[in-house]
Length: 79
Image (cartoon, rainbow, N blue to C red; front, side, top):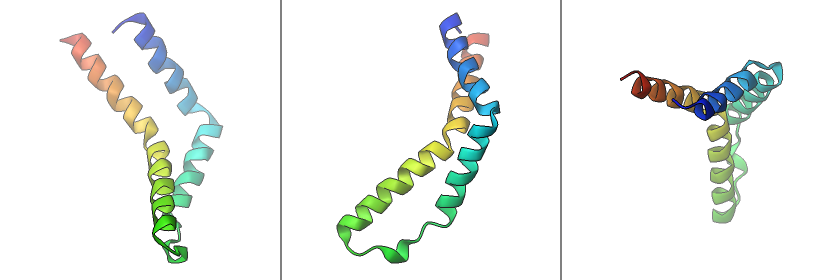
C-alpha cells in the first residue's frame, strides 16, 4: 500500500472515531428503521423515497465499506 493510500484510510479511520460520526450514523439508522412508506402518494413519490433510502443506507454502510476496502488492500499488499 502506498503512503497516499495509507493516509486516505487513516483519515477515514480518524473520522470514524469521532462522536459526531457515531451520532450521525445512529440518527441515519433510526431514520431508515422508521421510514414511513405509507405516506407515498404516487410513483414519483415512490422513486424519491427509494432514492432517499438508498442514500441513507449508503451513508450508514460507508464505514464498513471503507474498512472492507482497507482489509482487501492490506491483503494484496501482504501477498
